[in-house]
Length: 479
Image (cartoon, rainbow, N blue to C red; front, top):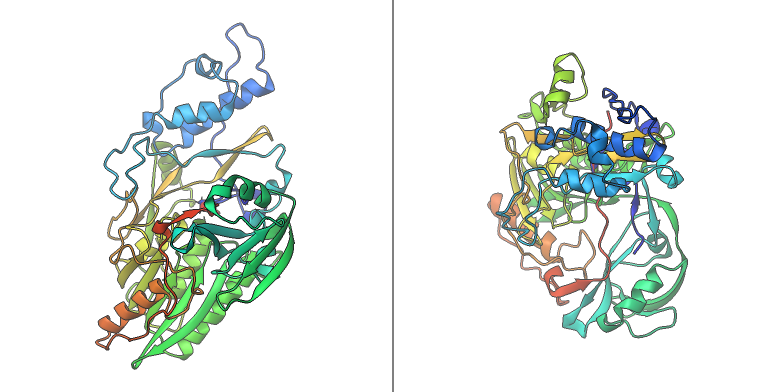
């Protein structure tokens, strides 16, 4: 599926010209050929990939010293292959509990963006391509195809397709089962998509969608639950995009602001933050949300710190403000004390920063569809190479105020393997993960748990086969 996010951000920074100042690292000029001849453009790109990765990588000390650089880079004609080789030199982790199928190098995150041909990616960061529909085959329902997430701002969302809708047809093909996956993949890669769905209430609708680029709208929902004398705020965000665009507050920022204004009016001190599909985004936006959540006990204290390699540490020691400690600056009228996060294996990067940063100051609990979050404590910024490639080298690691870091295997859930019941809408108090969060908060508050339950069979993502996965947003450094 081509639903790749342009920019493929991670708690990172991307389009430097729009996001702010680009990280100013020392340029390392590629050396001339031993015979004195000039390097071709392609050879210079390869030389710079090595030089910049060696300088910027969090694991700089593990990367070999090539002298001359061309002795190494001339072995490669593809810069992605070179980068893969370099990433392979970073330390390996072999004791993954929640991700046992991976035992490779710690740097599985760095990547190279083609900025020469992907013009849209160099113009806007907060874009996605496709229909914005993410689907799974449910074996409990005769291997039928269902929508489990619809991205805000997408053609699918604008048309009115909902989470939980059953897909009856695509392009006139009624065989919507896993055995027909190859053809279905072709349909959702096409320039147009004719799709027929059936809602949970058995209402059937047909749609004609056009594959296109769209502005991501990650704000899903803000609301207040009232149960057994307890109030709990709820906010759902599917990624962390820019706070402003063209000098105007984005829809996401307006949604966050209005939601927390409502929380303040209702004196909310219990909060549910739904990050189950949030793969990351901008560090600055994660910081903005953290300043909305933090209470007086954390105000003015360390939010998180950056751990750097020797090169970036030297720059900071010489006065650079790029990676100084982040400090909480309370931006709300609430005094939230209990926070429950809803997470999955999709929850990564900037989302994990939010969870980790609050742990030293609040009663934080985690309800997970999986055993843990994804596990990505490192972030990036883009370094452009000769207007051809943008290198995103994993350059900094996040450490919270209690020195919690190295969650390569994810941040463990306190309540793991709770069904992500995609037959219920996000924020529905009878949806399994939301229900569990509410019951946890009721217990903390000394209240009786609700007797509400779902009348619709839930279906854990462990019991289904996904047709297409939500692309990661990553962690973008955008200062």
